[in-house]
Structures are given as structure tokens and as C-alpha cells.
Length: 230
Ligand code: SAH
Image 1 (cartoon, rainbow, N blue to C red):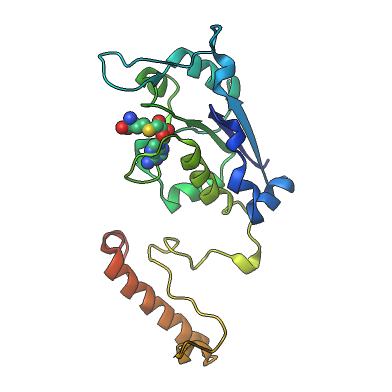
Image 2 (cartoon, rainbow, N blue to C red; image 1 turned 180 degrees about the vertical axis):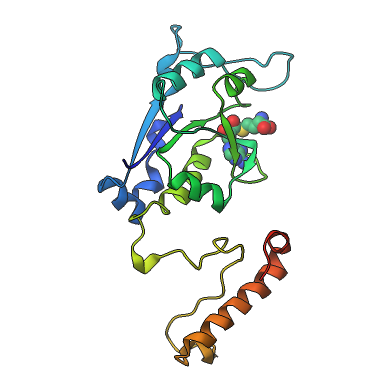
């Protein structure tokens, strides 16, 4: 069983978008993962295909209607569907590499993309939606956030990235930021590659990289150090 992503959105034409390029696109073509979209508006019941209404209690903007969204979710994730149901939301738990890795090992995800002011709380509770945020800022809709989530997840699906592009050393994988990378030419604008990297001494190289990771993480993301040291 490969990873199956289903997106509920008012803008299905945005997908696969960047997810169709490069290694992720190849993985999609090769069936290592799949992507389907559900047009939320198809579940509207009136002549105008209305999906939103004014916020109860007043205030600006519109809110996605719970009855329409619930029908779209139920049609996309039928009973017994084991996939987690996710709502992209600035109020959600921040996306982490650890959650991306868990999702990549699972059967897939059903992802709801919000629009306008957001969605009715009763459908979040009633359908057990896991709210995930991609950062402390507000987007106009959940589509780009869903792509960010899927891009982080799909590249971790076994077989999507070749061995040459492995991720063991990457930022966050060991609780640290990645060490600086270099490639030829040996001298660029008068700056040489650090000699240790061309010394051929793999033990020393590993030690240097680890030290660099520690220095960078301490300087830029001390919050990561408190959860994991060394
Ligand atoms: N009024 C809401 C924001 C709505 S933004 C609030 O203040 O919390 C419209 C939609 O964009 C949201 O429903 C969500 O699906 C998406 N979105 C916006 N910012 C996001 C973020 N940081 N992470 C994930 N999704 C986001």
C-alpha cells in the first residue's frame, strides 16, 4: 500500500503544483504515492453552490459551513478509512520533522484546506480533525500549507528520494541543524573549501560536521538544544 493523499479544497486546480515536479513528481508517476482532490463546492446544495456563511456572533469575513464540509469529508474518507484527517490551520500544532516522518510511514492523509475566516468548530470536533500549522503567520488558504506538509512528508516515503539524496544528516533529523555544505571549485572568490573536508579523514570530517551542527544550532535555534543535546 502506498501513501494516499486526499485534499479537500475549493481550488483543486492548484494540485499537484510543485508536488508534481522533480523527485516527488517522479514518485507520483511511479505510484509511490497518490494524490486526489475533492472539490468542496460539489457538495453545496443550493443553486449558487454556497459553501460559506457569515460568522455567528458577528465579525468580518465568512466561515465554511459545517454541513457541506462534513459531507465532503465523509465522501473522501469513507468509514474505516485509516488515514488521519488533518486541517491546515494557523491554530494547529506546528508541523515538525517528527510528525512528517510518522505520516510518511502511515497509509496517507486526508487534508482539509480552509479558506476565508476558517471553518465551523463543530466539524473540527465532529470529524476529529488534527489541526496542523506550518508557522506563526496567516495565509489566505490552506492549499499552500497542505503542499508544504505533503512535500515534507512525501520526500520521506521510502523510495521517493534516491540513496544519493538520503536524509540521515539533514536538519532536524538528529535534533540539530545541518552543518555547512561545500562543493567544487576548490577556491571560490578567494575562499577555499575547509581543508578538513578534502583531507580524506572520515573520522575527522564527521567530528567537524557534528561540531559545526552544534555551533549553528546553539547560535540560531537554541530552543532545539533544550530538547536534545550532543
Ligand atoms: N481566521 C483564521 C485564519 C484563516 S486563514 C485565524 O485567525 O486563525 C484561512 C485558511 O488558511 C485557514 O483556514 C487555514 O486552512 C489556512 N492557513 C492560514 N494560515 C495557516 C498556517 N499558518 N498554517 C496552516 N494553514 C494556514
